[in-house]
Image (cartoon, rainbow, N blue to C red; front, side):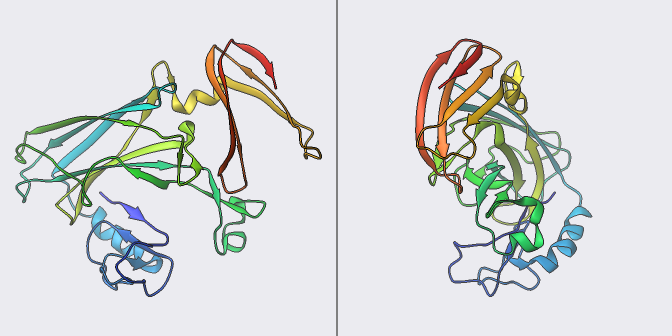
Length: 262
């Protein structure tokens, strides 16, 4: 089991010795780049990953989440099953929310990752948006940690429309959950699929199609937007700048299926 978080670490107690730096697991880095000892250089990621992948996990974790696209309430169900006795009396559970397709700056992006560039902005994927469990090292998992024990947890989270002035796009969200030993090793990790009932979040784009904005490029202060929705739904228009910040939001209310223009 592994959690790799490459990228800049800005909340360390004092500046790192260089960037990019990142954490693999929660173990102390062999050659730490930050005073906390957790962050290592990208050249060490591969070796650290291989060490962790060779280790056995004594607990399996899985989950399922359901998202109401109208209320934006996310209901998350997590299960962790102990296949062997844990060497610790209790474990920690952490659930994180990430988002794809966030546009923003990236040093060296046009040189090293040109395919990810859109104009002068870089497409950031799997960006951490929020931690849904409490505590810096996760929530304590109540109950036994012996073989054959099942831990379950259900939690809800209302997805905000923006975080740090950047739109939270429901179709681009992902969940990850992991079990760790206090603030040390991560033992098991799982991607938690998100559904919205009969239509999964990954299928939400099927509800909206034939989107056109004209004139393009815009040469006047007014823009015409037309689109088709496959079924009756609540619709909002959001105008964003190149770094994903919402400039204007217009709530259109519940619209019938078919063509619409504004």
